[in-house]
Length: 126
Length: 244
Image (cartoon, rainbow over all chains, first blue to last red; front, top):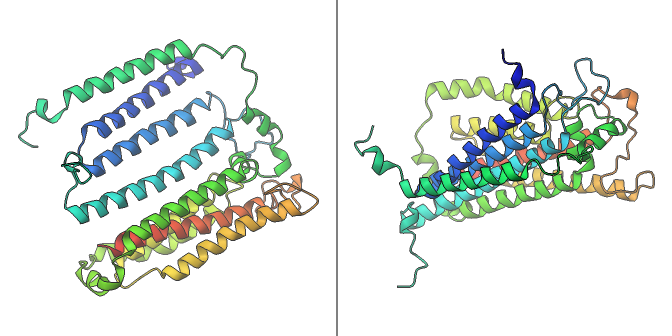
């Protein structure tokens, strides 16, 4: 009944639609929320959608993980390892960016007692 | 639920802007995606998979991360180090004057937390070490295992207010593993048998593929990456907890 999911076009289309939706949910969070931490969470959601898209598009139905285990003897019919390796890099960088951003937000809140982006007027000419 | 009506909680203009962006991107993709697919003949990944047996690593992702793109990994670890340093710098300033006060102010962790952490700490450490050591055989590796080890220490930090990660020792571990990574890379560059940065200068026979001791220098580098990531993420947790 669900055989149509085995065609790469359909499956990749579903993945693209899903991760695009996730990306724009994150973008909405980044643009609409005024709380600093909520904006950072929006950035994290956008990053997640890009990881999902990378991993999903690198694999076609029927390909196995690029690991020689469970009786496999040959590196054929496997998913492309490069997007997976790059995604690993991106996850670590994303974590570093999030940690630094959250620390900056906490420090800003401690110095000014303020976590609203609209009220960040310290550098404004008055 | 809050009493604010839905119309006030959703920013309609922003939502419309985001939807417009989404529609434009989808349009762009439908126009652009069919192009270039017809002439596609193999990717870099396929080429690397074909010759992956030369690294004798059963996990092709690991051989890409550590061997073929090892230089990228070095840069990535450097970015993580910069972030950890930045977090430490942001939270480290006021440590001297109120260290005593901050420990006393934190509420005592509850019994469930303490017992659970005592139970989970060794298991998490073991799992992290296993994932690091088997990075060239199974899914996982230095980054994943390092983060699991850092999580174990984070649980311990939450459960036990007297437990403190020594900054000097963590920093030493971090710099030792970082310089070990660079040193292994330079050894590969200097030795005549390889002659490239991060070249695999240890013997790595293809017959040994799938065993724990195989793939030459790859597991060593991944262990160093694991120690470094664990130390850095642990230092970030420690810095964030200390400032409470």
